[in-house]
Image (tube, rainbow, N blue to C red; front, side, top):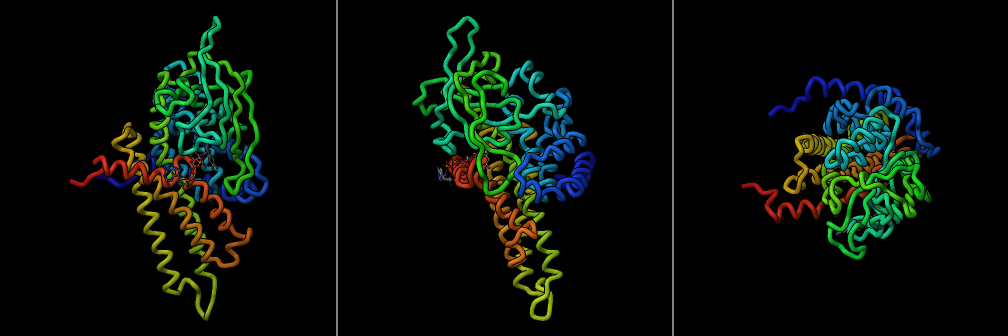
Amino acid sequence: MDFDLSPELAALQESVRRLAQDKVKPRAREIDSTGEYPTDIYDAFRRADLLGLCLPVELGGSGAGILGLTIAVEEVAKYSSSAALMLLLTRLPTGPILIAGNDDQRQRYLPGIARGELRAGFGLSEPQAGSDVAGMRTKAVPDTGAVGGWVLSGTKCWMSGVRQADWYTVFAKTGDPSSRAHDSITAFIVERGWDGVSVGRTDHKMGVRGVDTGELLLDNVHVPAENVIGEVGGFRLAMLGLNAMRPIVAARGIGLAEGALMYATEYVKGREAFGKTIADFQGIQWEIAKVAVDIEAARLLTYRSAWLADQGKFTKEYVPFLSMAKYYATELAVRASGLAVQLLGAAGYMEDHPTELWYRDARQLTIVEGTSQVQLGLIARGVLGHDLWWD
Ligand SMILES: Cc1cc2nc3c(=O)[nH]c(=O)nc-3n(C[C@H](O)[C@H](O)[C@H](O)COP(=O)(O)OP(=O)(O)OC[C@H]3O[C@@H](n4cnc5c(N)ncnc54)[C@H](O)[C@@H]3O)c2cc1C
């Protein structure tokens, strides 16, 4: 067992750390207060070749894998959850194509992501169907005309990066719309420029501002048969894609927790009360220590889950390990950012410090890509089914 990063991954960590400190940190507050998409940060990621981290070399990526992207996301999330989300979005919508797409789909849609010429969004959630994806109503019916293919209609919601995306991975019911069977759902690639595709309302959010979330409206959109990802009825693909994403979302949690704890630690070393610094109080030290333990535990869970995912181990039997990383790291982000606000007292509640921003941003992480409750359900199912067992 080797706990060291390879020289390549250590160099990646070092270079992204510098980029995050130089370019992301100074912009984090402004991104939040204006809510404007930070094109300068996207350009900086492109110049540093970070947009193709998890894409294979033959598709123009750098082949650093899920572990490489996880490490990069952790560094960026120390300063801005929104900027870290921009990196994450290079994998969420591309995942199903990487897992089950054909060669033509890969060549058409993925090199542009790595080059920073195309962006993509992931359309699973609907207003009435978040955790309960089988409740989706977006439907795809066969196009009976000469050209064939499918006609998609429906509304996707809360989609990250919806406004900037050039194409979308969209899930729709190809079987009976009232069916809850997973084989009634299929994944499609839908281009932004096609007739009937439009962006609806965008959301006014508590945090993670700058990268819009909003609605994708599909009004009788013709989708050619060659844009079906994998098989018709291959909904399992959505779950495989999300399983492989767990370490990357978890990295947003550990990065945020690290940023918050480091900031609060420096503050308490300088703040005086009762004739000493507040860092001198044992009650404060223990709170710092507990979060430090949790950060290291979360990193171990997260790096292991990234290592698993890179070996293609994101099928059912590995789900508990992947879900644990997401659950633990994102709950930690909420706890660590809450502690940071508390350690700064009134100052931590004000916009003069980044603590209140981390606190708002962290709340997204326990909801998105499978809530904490959904992850606990998956872990429990693994234990009950002996996928996670200790003898
Ligand atoms: C900022 C942001 C960005 C997002 N980006 C995207 C995106 O890019 N693409 C996309 O498709 N979606 C996106 N989402 C949507 C996200 O994936 C969903 O919000 C999430 O899956 C939860 O669904 P829901 O909000 O409908 O909550 P619900 O499913 O309505 O759940 C509400 C509450 O009930 C709990 N609950 C639900 N079912 C169970 C159960 N079986 N047992 C116990 N508790 C349960 C949940 O844990 C939660 O606490 C985004 C959401 C946010 C906030």
